Image 1 (spheres, rainbow, N blue to C red):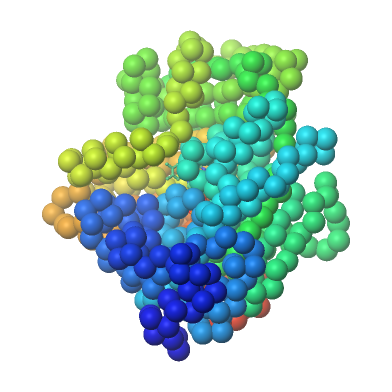
Image 2 (cartoon, rainbow, N blue to C red):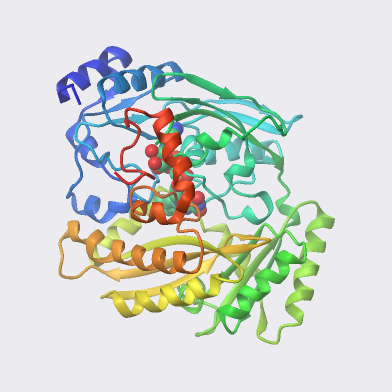
Length: 480
Ligand SMILES: Cc1cc2nc3c(=O)[nH]c(=O)nc-3n(C[C@H](O)[C@H](O)[C@H](O)COP(=O)(O)OP(=O)(O)OC[C@H]3O[C@@H](n4cnc5c(N)ncnc54)[C@H](O)[C@@H]3O)c2cc1C
């Protein structure tokens, strides 16, 4: 880098005005990390290089100005919007980075109920968009647990997925078109059409780029009718996970598209459903939704499939609907969680992967057995499948450990990274993908080359072409 920290700040102030350049030390420290180092944050210990400034962009032009400036002077830029990243994607790996914050670009630009699509700036919180849409009987169909906090730009940049994905798909199935700015300041727009076959689908250069290729400034997503009155909630106990996976598979390959298809193992099930789930049992959960006839037929089809399984027992549907109503995490639950971690040192982490039907049970069993055998101070280890496809499903490992014998800065190295290593190794061994929806961030980049295999060539070439000076979110996706 050619510029001093002071010169970076002065340059940003010239471009954005001093009121849009944050240099408060506490805010800079908090902006050097994300939820991956939550334990450090809770204790006020910051081990990552502190950024020079947080640049609050208010327009696409300002994003372009900041990127052009950073590119010219070799300054690392970390894009951000909702700040719910969990995998180190927001860590400023290089001293005197610029955190480019688009949360001020928060306008819903159009809701087009005739063509069933909505366009928003990157800093629109999904919850705000959904609330507006539901007033008109519409929904995006996107409902990640972070819906109250995450913004449209980040949701697209991480290739996020929501709780109703089995019907609506992940964000990649919802994005119609978008606007993005590249490191040299070039502003590009992929137009909104239902489908086109004009070479490679270039939306995917931006979708899931995690701030390493371009800055997403605007997105257009599909809309669907919102018909919650037709929802049918189904729950079944199941004696073992292997049978549970078989039931999920049968539902999917029979052609049913419930919005929700989930399977919790006994440990994770006890964490969520202790008030009714008998000890040692797993639980299957389905939601059928859509127009009344479709929802009813989907529910009927699932009931018929489960009826053949002596390993399954019915759960009252009110338990399932009540649980769903309170699943998302907003600021209040995050604050309660932080307080509890500070007092107890007992911390909850997750790692999500995917595999085809033939491998998912082996990934689940082997990774879980190794976590329990190899990691000290585990207080809970389990998992669930929450997103199913015709050819396989995901596994969301959910685990708690009590941090013992290390300071806040040791939590990642003693617990979280070794657990990630086990899960990535076992997933790769059985041919699965090491990240299902949280993004690679910086936490899982050590396994990126193995994950991509020979297709890593395409990734490296994209990075070299669009970000030749390597200023976009160093250390994310591509190992630094
Ligand atoms: C409690 C909780 C629950 C969660 N539940 C889910 C879930 O159900 N499903 C799911 O998929 N994820 C979930 N996540 C993870 C997280 O919410 C998602 O990854 C989300 O998409 C991040 O959006 P954000 O706006 O907060 O992005 P940020 O945290 O601001 O950024 C995330 C990443 O995207 C990059 N980025 C952000 N904005 C832009 C932009 N405009 N252009 C280019 N790059 C950008 C950043 O550099 C970073 O690498 C959860 C997280 C939490 C804390």
